[in-house]
Image (cartoon, rainbow, N blue to C red):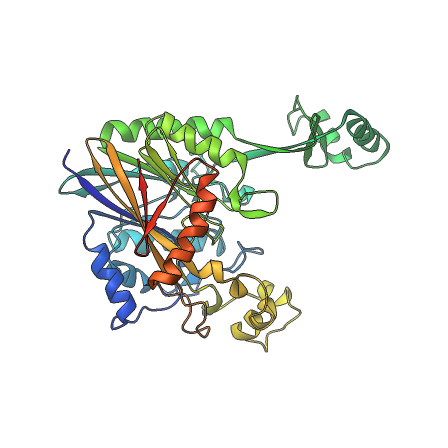
Length: 431
């Protein structure tokens, strides 16, 4: 295998066209052209708003016209992760439309499919230097978003490649006894108990269940664990890909956090990321919370817990369903702009008011003989200070702004034992 040059970015929540005479975009386009592998997470569905919306969404009912795929291609990307919490915002029709559009445009993409086998399978990018595999997974999804396994007599279900997880709350023995008394003296567990008795649900052993929450005695706190069945299925996929490709990367879309600290990943995300590398992945590319999280180097392989946003046009989706307006007590006479104003209180709260949502990095590295010598981190800005119409498009930062972003990322990464050297507006991780 020759040296393969790789550039990876976070979420591309693209809902409008990219101006091809924009100096900032042109500079990024020229930069990406120097790499064999150019990755982003594609976080919208594509259709012409001829699909029925879900009753709930991943936050915004994410959708764009199919033409935005041409803009990502123009910018230089050649491989997309697609498993995320917005895949079913427009039900199965929206997902199937997205798949069809990606296939017609000859994109290499992973993480969604017409059934579980399609959603789970690795996808391969052929480069002059070698073959690269991508497996796309999301831990943030509704139960019905899971792609379904097909049978000889029943077709599978369209959906995402899922990684489930369990959350266990640890409490004192006295508190656990009190919770059990609540379960015994109220109807909070009545539906569960009857479904178990009648054979519709299996009886679970282990932590005490109250409603849909799990408790056990121990040092007070909360622990999270990856779903073992999902992990085993993904392990098989990694092993398959590692025999068929020179490099294997796992894309992980995850909003789950440590407590209320959005910039820190939940415990099971580290458990799963290390698990992937233990079984043959060359790195894990994380995204989801719309801000940066720390970087870990595990066995000489990078784990990017979140690369934040690369394109973020969340507030300029062309259309939203009635359920979106209902959230803000608006009606059919209101427009998307009215809804976005209500949600953000005219740009004073939420993602629209958080400058960290609009700054990130492009991570770049070379792989030679399976080894990575260093990772280069180039800061980008998505124009937090601009108007709604101008926000969300990436450009490289100036040195002062860039070093501020890198210092914050270095602090987050230090918790994983990773040192980032900052010089001339760029960050370097020596492996």
